[in-house]
Length: 231
Image (cartoon, rainbow, N blue to C red; front, top):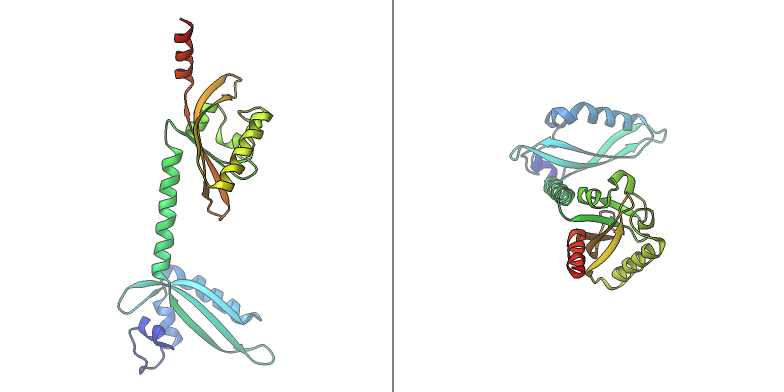
């Protein structure tokens, strides 16, 4: 074993390499049986590379997350002769990944539950990727109904949806935010409303461009101003 391998066992390079039985005993109880079974299946097959991740009880730091890449040396007739492996401690990376996932879930929950700001995400075709609760309340369409649709199927005419798509492409090319600006929309029940909209782009989780539209319902103010002008 190399220095990292020996360190996980609390040993030095001068110490003998631990026996496989000790490796098994140090596996986390919740991982042990499935991992040993997977190892046995790999040895019984004709594969030469065996990659796993598991929790391993180290001598000084308790359980650590291990990335283990093993190479199975086989005879000419395919029988396993020995296994050469390298154990890599990926605990910090695993913790960073989990922290990022928690942050993403917290952000998504904040956006989803923002009561007065309608937030939608669109791809470069203008198709809905995300539609929060406030969007449901303002426009009348539930998230499940809106997903994957373009705005001419929801709140705009074909011409308005075409202009919206041009705006998305403009934002994508320039990286600049458009708005806030006032737009009219059509609710699910056919009534007309007005909102103040801002559009900008963000990278999506898949690394592709994603466009965000944030709307504040301005209908009551618009109607009130119109009534004052008529009085």
